[in-house]
Image (cartoon, rainbow, N blue to C red; front, side):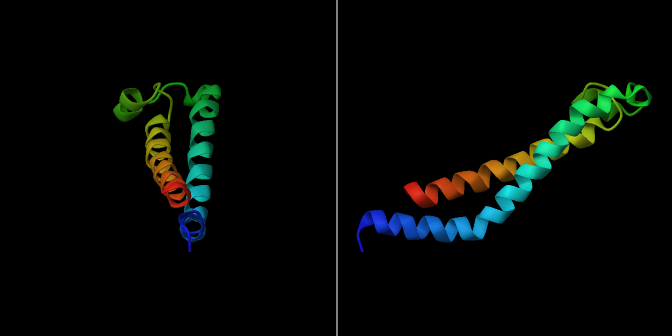
Amino acid sequence: MNEQKTHLMRGLVVLLVLGAPCVIASAIAALAFLNFFVSGWLPQNWFSDNGADWVFGTGSVGDAASYLKIMVFGGIAYATGFAIRWGFRG
């Protein structure tokens, strides 16, 4: 088996194993990113009394939780995507 075929087989195995977690983590991060902006449009969410929302976000209610989801699941999506890329390229 030559090198190119080895990369293809390894890439397909890694894609099979990490493909679903990559898609799920990307979707969660994208939804949290959308929620980060859309939640600030509602007047009842404009000002938070939680200090974490002011430190990690824009001061809207729930910004810290959205920021944490974006960072955690975005990191997972990046790492799994990079591993899948490594599987095909070597």
